[in-house]
Image 1 (cartoon, rainbow, N blue to C red):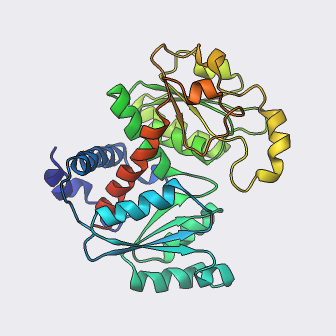
Image 2: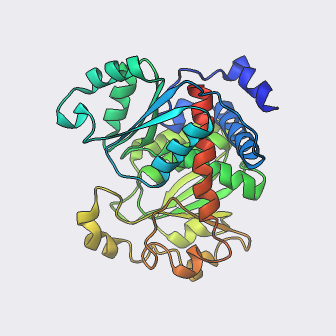
Length: 320
């Protein structure tokens, strides 16, 4: 399907939709967004101008700091012909006690779309409830769907398929694990999460992913043994042991996760042509060894680049 055909296909008219988690979208809609991201990447590499956001403004609310989310959304909005407005918690009244409902109502009168990167997922849900424009979850404590959309685009580009691919996630059962499980279940990717006791993914999210997996044949599992998760994996995925907001638990988590470092020995259980992924920032020598993250199997910068293209696809489809 060409880009022009894709954008006029009424089956996938996503204009005005929110993007809060991968479970908001069907398998076909997610695949459409991935195809659109790949097409927009091709256009950008070829210097082709495509500006569906011309004359539009996207507000970017950051209650958590960021490198990839901020830069990719600002650059992406510009490349699509729009204007991005950076709004830190110190720049708007939301940080001084204004209700989310009032913030949503006001911003909907000014903006054509809103991205929010925050802590509690309930804040994302409430913002979307009261906003009359599309709301995109740039990250919450529960989910990181923008990252995972880029991740599955990257896997598809490197492996040529998603159905039947095995992804081993080793580490904290956090927002990354949640969105990888939901996205994998929707796309037919087998996702094996290895986490130490007390740090497993949310049970409700795990059960939801297993339900979605019934339709695609995906296998979604949570195990204790990293070796079991990585066995015959096509993709090994890691994240920091202490995510933003949990820094005070760093020492405690270093003890809990000491057997969960992705190093050359653990990676040897994966397929010989495995790829290594990390959502960044990374702590070399903690969750991953230098040899793995900077080695020949690492595709972390392809993955980081695709944040730009995947988020352009989101904005083009929802706001354009």
